[in-house]
Image 1 (cartoon, rainbow, N blue to C red):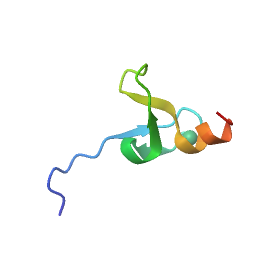
Image 2: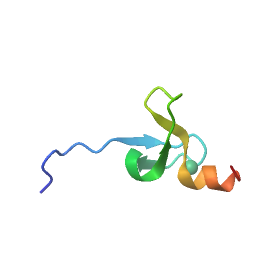
Image 3: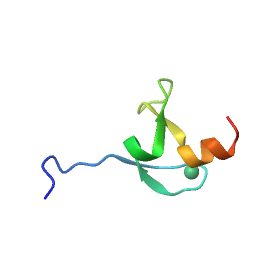
Length: 48
Ligand SMILES: [Zn+2]
């Protein structure tokens, strides 16, 4: 069983797949929630 239970997720604006913030998204200090709008995979695909 999970102790703190709450896993923050976010839907990528590119591929529209819901992923865990800590696992699926790069941090982005300019974003409201502190993570990029696009997931790591989409960011990588963009060649950035
Ligand atoms: Zn994506």
